[in-house]
Amino acid sequence: MYEDGMVNCWELVDMPGLQAKLRSGWLTPTIPEGEAISIFGLGSYRIQSASWTHDQDSYYQLIQATVQQLNPELSNIYTISEAEVKLKEQRRVASSPSSVHFQIVQEQFYQTVEGKGFYIFMKRSEGISLCHLVVYKNGTVNVYGSGFEEHCTLEEALILFDDGTLFTEISEPTEIAIPELGKITLSDMLYGSEDDEKKKELLDSYAKLQGEKTAHELCREAYYNYLEYPTEYNRTKLKEKYEQVPAHERMYLGDMDSKDWDYRRIIYNPEEKREV
Image (tube, rainbow, N blue to C red):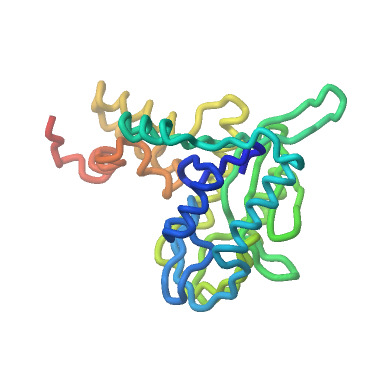
């Protein structure tokens, strides 16, 4: 949500557009029991039961109130014109902004450090919450959950993965609090990232913030090196780099159609030839 009243819900809409998304059911604050919830970058889980906080009207009111917190006078609220809608449809343009995480490290001169984040489950004495974990360039990690914030170092965050405080995998019915939406009991995990793979993603995000090459970049380099020099040594190096990429992100190594198919062909089925 932005102070000019624009809302990013996979595409950028104004407040009337948001109402239309809610009325059509394209955007919803509830999911029927027995259906699956897919959490971006985390996994898909079956909902056994749920206690939702909002219906369509109260959810819209929540967003209105949040915009007013950002812009108390509600000045310069933007409304998308019919001409803009038609132009975007003609040119097949869809706006989808992305936010940048940052942490204020010094109020004087407003010094900040950039961060990168993803969703994760966190166990606390009060229960389990869906959280947003953000690692910052200075090595600090913040976990934002339902009514709380946890702060630690990168090393401490890795320990929280090891002891099961931070996790992704669900093997039995588990109640999860989702900020602003309610509490749901997830019965099983349909697919998703493993705990160790999410820990890899945390380390990879930190490396990127440091200006280092990510596991993706190193893997692609090894792939192109193998294509140019297809030796057994280079195939072994490619396998090593490929397995360092978090498993749930390997599909992004190729394009939308090929995904990581050619990487897997070279590594695990080298006798299979690629059509060019």
